[in-house]
Length: 114
Image 1 (cartoon, rainbow, N blue to C red):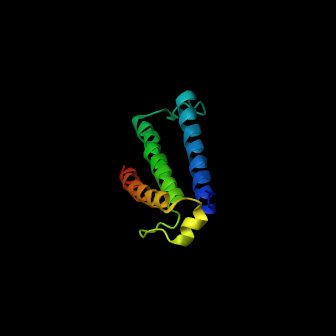
Image 2 (cartoon, helix red, strand yellow):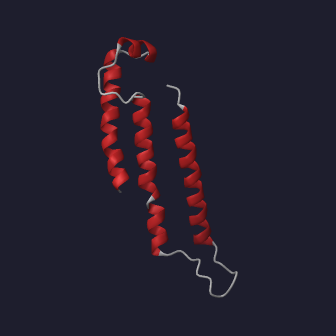
Image 3 (cartoon, one colour):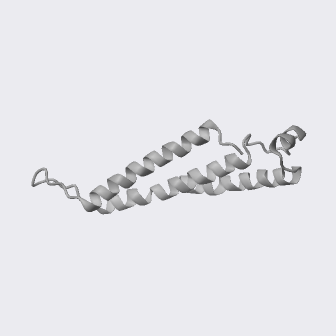
């Protein structure tokens, strides 16, 4: 299936945020601030917790994007004949995709809570 504009925007924003977080974490791990003697730009425990917080964010985004790929309309009803014809899949495969998409919403909510 082709990705929608919202999915592409979500992937791009997650990639940008992940790259910025990774850059900042790498900078703070490898470089010390030499601007002045009282500078305290060093890696601390709270930095580790914030870096680890990006893991559930990425996992939630993956779950939601997979769910949107499997069930773009996020419907709870059975697929219509028009949807079956448009997707190129059988009705059975489309129903299975809908069930898996609904099941992916549970881990995405758990990752959101983390």
